[in-house]
Image 1 (tube, rainbow, N blue to C red):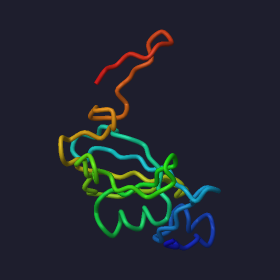
Image 2 (cartoon, rainbow, N blue to C red):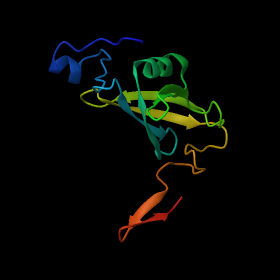
Image 3 (cartoon, rainbow, N blue to C red):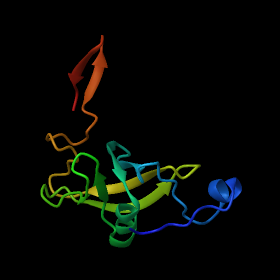
Image 4 (tube, rainbow, N blue to C red):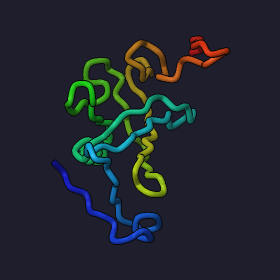
Length: 130
């Protein structure tokens, strides 16, 4: 597993120049994929240290599948590779934002939608709004 440094203190974590992601007790960090051109949120996934390191090194999104317990490179089977144009971390480095350009059919969702956020809550029910 790839190791990232630990921030020396709160100031280093919040304002420093060192990437020191704070993975949770399971070794994971939330990752939000946002379309680099439109700003649309495409999906939320998880990364472990290896997935984050590979994403940074390869320039394509790599995630951790909690259900399968393994690394997965987005688009390996679907063709929906996510080319990463920018990586951001939040203020306390416990979430990452990937600005991506989706390849293939331009989608991100495994059920066929452009975004995983294709349903709206209306009167307590889910309504599809692609």
